[in-house]
Every structure is written in C-alpha cells, then in structure tokens.
Amino acid sequence: MIGYNKLIQRLKVIKEMGYIKTHRTGNTGIGKTLEDFLGIEENNIPGPNATKIELKSARKDAISMLTLFTKSPLPPKVNSVLLERFGYESARKNKRKELHTTVNAREFNTLKGKPCFKIDIQKDGVNLVTIKGEIVGYWDKETLKNSFERKLPKLLYVKAETKGKGSNEEFWFNEAWLLSGFNFDNFVRLLNEGVILVDIRIGQYPDGRPHDHGTGFRLLPDKLDSCLTHRESIM
Image (spheres, rainbow, N blue to C red):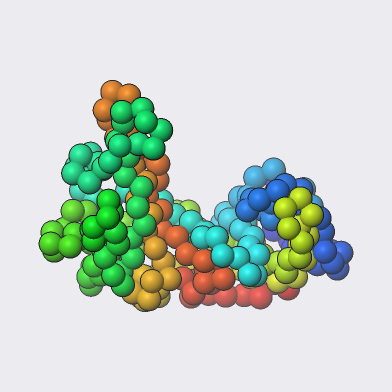
C-alpha cells in the first residue's frame, strides 16, 4: 500500500503531466485513471498520522452526485415499513416492490405522482416526514456524525479540469486538498439549502424481505469541502 508522502509526490508529478486520457469511459473514469497513475489498487491509504485517508477525485464541472455515506433510517426495521407503505412494483416486472426516491429539506418530493417525503431538521438530528407531518424515519445527530467519520475520517480530495467526452475524455489533476473534521452545523446547513440530498434505495428479496441498497446522503463534488472544517491545500 502506498504511503501518504509518496502519494503526494506522485500527485505533484501527475499535475506536471497535464491532460491524461481516461482509462475508463463514464463517471468512474476519473477515479480509475487517477488510481492507475498513482499505482494504488484501493482508495484507502495510510495518513501522515497513521489515520486512514480516503481518496476521492472529481471533475471541477461535475454534475453527477457524490455519495458521502450510506445509512438506513431508524428505528430498526423501518425499511420494511417504508417499503410496505410507500413501495411500488419494481420496473423489472418481477412482482417485487421497490422504493427509490430522492428527498430534500426544501420541499416535499413527488412519489407516484403525489407529494410525499421531506427532510425535517431538528436540533438533535433529522427526520423523514410525510406530507401529513408523520415522522416515518429519522437519523440522530450521533448516528450521522459516526457514519460520516467512519466513511471519511480524512479525505484526500483531488480535482481535475476536463476536456473531451466518452473514451476521449482527458483529465488534468491540478488541485488537491486534505480535508477532515465533520461539522454537524455545516452538514445541516447544506441539507437546509438543498445541497445535500437523501436517496432512499430499498428493494425486495424474492422471499419478501427488504433489500437495503444503501440510503445515501449525496451532494455535488464541488461542495464536499463545505462539510468539513479542516482544509489543507496539497497542491
């Protein structure tokens, strides 16, 4: 596994190379290309103080969302209730239910053609509420904090200019930040502003049990550093 100092050296060399052709077509091409040039097989590296660092990369003009972390709502087994009450027939026509919907804190979303869910922010956490004001799930402050810090205790965040499309896309990795320090107030502010969205993704096994595809807290990559309090420019 590559060490932190060696990785920073390689990043600076890559920056001087200018534009590099993608190694994979699509949204994941940027991460694959960077990891290949860094010579790493997994995006978890030892940090300068032995703390693991997550490596993430993003196009500076990205419009696709980045998942911060995934965490099912509480209480336990609430996914079964949500799927039963609000689920609909799977698009695969396999007679199973699914519930895939994006929720924000600014307005109620639409599900099956009607207003349905909204994120309601409280002092000690956030609730998932219906148009009738019913709390059908929640995430407490400590759960959110632990989920974020477990996934992203420290983050080496590399940004790239891009040109071209598809298999001809090229990246210039010319900016990198070391980020840490989850801040719940910032997190709540971004939820309030509609910058962070919640994707509920629940499926169903053949025996009827809910299949949690990972309820994700997501945002645009260029807003990622707003979630963290400590920012150190690497290059």
